Each structure stands twice: as structure tokens, then as C-alpha cells.
Image 1 (cartoon, rainbow, N blue to C red):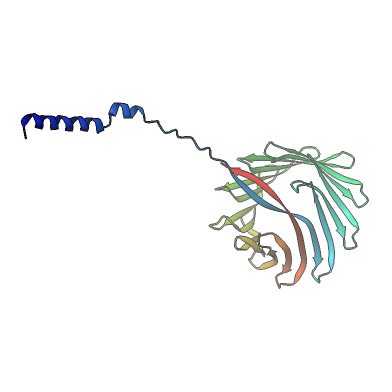
Image 2: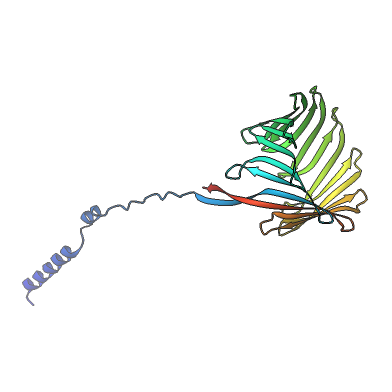
Length: 283
């Protein structure tokens, strides 16, 4: 091959190579940055079913009907409005009416017996209860204190506003573990110690006198985290009474049976429920 021809071929190859290679400066200007849109996370809707009692019937140990209570609520079942107690003949015995900041007790004839004025804070915690008779005469005052939403002090005063008693509530890891009952002078008259299992379920409640001697106690048994048995014991630990709870699948006690130590039924309660749905959102 002649030298001139070889030079021509080389030049041609260089030209073709340059033409086929991308122009970096031009190609980069054609790249469109990807637009990343922030995906807004919608809050998770949580629907909780809440069951509330509407009728409680009491029976004697032999199964004979004793009395029953009917509970009435507002339209969505979130606020208790009235409780009416009837005898076995369906005759009303008394009624309790709940209004905003007031609880009133009426006789069978519908006459006012007494009432309470109730003050609450923004979180719904009861701060004060003032009880009056039907002539508006003050009978007693209860005052309550809270820390982190948990009740810590309850004080009771008479009609002259003199202190009658103080109850202190002590917590460990948000569990109520001790209740102290104090005299007007602040001395311990009695106290209760409460114990829990690893799941935070109350398993015992022991009652002591001022000297620290056991007066009586209660122990609690569970199945699938639902209370099924409560034992009331004497100071020596022997069983005095038993309370058995027969629950539905949601843990609502449909039947409560009160027995003596020999398992003889003394009283039986049956409870009917209705339900409502509460909606909350989790961010």
C-alpha cells in the first residue's frame, strides 16, 4: 500500500471514531435530574371496640332473682347518664342521674335524696366532690391530687371542712403498689401492699394494720390475662370467700359468682353489654 493511501485510511478511522464518540459536554447537559417527591405518610387508623354494661342482675344463692340495675347512656354509648335499681317485681327502688359535673340520687318515688358536685381537670381527672343533702346542706368534701395522670392523694373533709382522713397512693413503674390510710393527724392507721406478676397483672393485695400485722388479703388468678378468680382470705391465710368470673372471649365478665369457703354460692351477678367503636390514629 502506498504511503499516501495509508495516511488516508488512518485519517478516515480517526474521523469516524470521533464522530461516533459522544460529546461529553453536550450529553451531560441533556441529563434531567430525577424529581424525588416526598411521600406523605398517612396516619394509621385504629378502631377499638369498647364494651359497656347496660344491665346487671343479682340472684340469691338458690338462683332466685333479687334485684337488677339498668344503665342508660348517651347516643353513642360513651357517657353514662342514669342508673336505675329495680327489685325482683320490676319496681324501681332508686335511681342515680349523671349530669355534667353533678351526680344525683333519687328515691323510689323520684324525690331527691342527695347529690354531688364534681370538679374535673382538663384530662378528666376528678379534683373535688362535694356531697349535699336534698336541702343543699353540705355533708362532706373529697379532694384528689394527681401526678402524671395517676391519683396520689385523696382527702376527706366533714361538713365543717375539718380533715377526716387522708389516703396516699404510691406507685412503682406505674403500678399502684401501696395505699396508706392516714388519720387527721397524719399517722398511719392501716395500709395495703399490692403485688404484680411479670405481665403487670395484680396478683395480691395484703391489708395491714398500723403495726404492720396482716388483717386480711386478696389474691387474683388469671387465664389468658383475664381475671377468673379472686380469693378473700383471713389474717391467717385461710380462705373466707371466693369470687369467680366467667368471661366472654373479650374478657368481659358475663357472670360473677360469690361463694363461701365451701364453694356454696351466696350471690350471682349476670351482666349484659353493648359496644361502641372508638377511632384513634397512630402517626
